[in-house]
Amino acid sequence: MLSNIVQNHLDFIAFIIALLAERFIPLVSWYHPSTALVAIFRAIGKRTYKPKEPDNYQYLAAMLASTLILSIVLIIVVLILEFAFYPELLAGLILYLCLESKSVDKKAIRIAKLTKQNQKSAARELLKPLLARDVSQLSAPGIIKALIEGLILRSARYYFVVIFIFLVLGPIAVLAYRLLTLIQYAWRSEITPNSPFLAPLKLILFAIEFIPIRLLAFTVIIINESKLAVHYIKHYGRHFYQTNTGWLLSAFSASLGIQLGGPAIYFGKRFNKMRIGTDRLPVADDVPTIINRLNQIRAFWLLVIVAVEVLKVI
Image 1 (tube, rainbow, N blue to C red):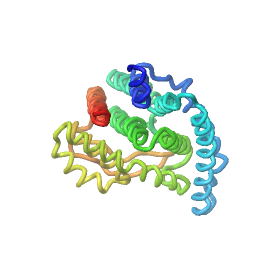
Image 2 (image 1 turned 90 degrees about the vertical axis):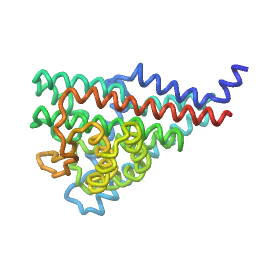
Image 3 (image 1 turned 90 degrees about the horizontal axis):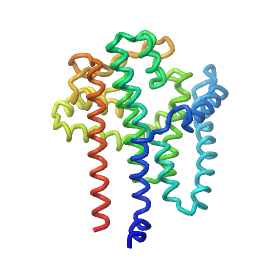
Image 4 (image 1 turned 60 degrees about the vertical axis):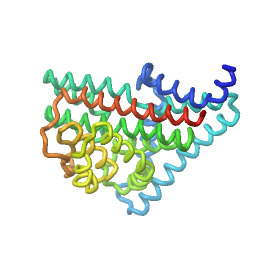
């Protein structure tokens, strides 16, 4: 009887195990496969990117390079899944490797503590790998604001969007999405964000994240019963440089009562991004608050997913 239940719900059991494993035994970045992949993708980007070439060349080069990377990795994984005795467990492993939240939370707490102790240089060094922007000149409030924005966006893309895609489209789709995010992360470390070389990736990721990011923003509104978040989304989010990001930052800005967004520097060039909210600048004590808020949302999503699975059985 028990063996039949396990067999019939092995995919959901593997899903829960992957979530718990990422929460309690996250992989350290030193030996996470994504670290090696980012180094490889960065080398491919350097060989492919030609800033003096026309825009059409850069669009085509980026699309071909991304397609080549995805094709090679996904074909190998699909073949392994086809011949795996328990493909559900392998799917759970793929989900575990694609998720990223706990390790970022720990680093965020450490950065907040360093900033509070006025150790800004150390805080900037820890913050640098989390962001594509230049952090060398950030003040203490700037460090915390950039940290909170990075924490929100990374949690959204590397946790909530990953779970959404896994449940809706399966492990191959979620692996493809994470590969695209790793490619973008690797290339953005060497290329300005307004480069046409990055445009195809931006468009694809925007389309993929459109629904799950908005679901996450609505979750923030529901949990905090924040009418101000709806106003912020209408006033700021819809006019932000990237509306997915705008929706999310607007919801959290209203929820926390802090100002987010604003100008950022990439490779020595200032990009004037919209400021969201008119409240105070964030402080170090806001970092544990945002982590707790994200944990509440994770618990809410998990309860909804479990409830849907129970309804399927009934």
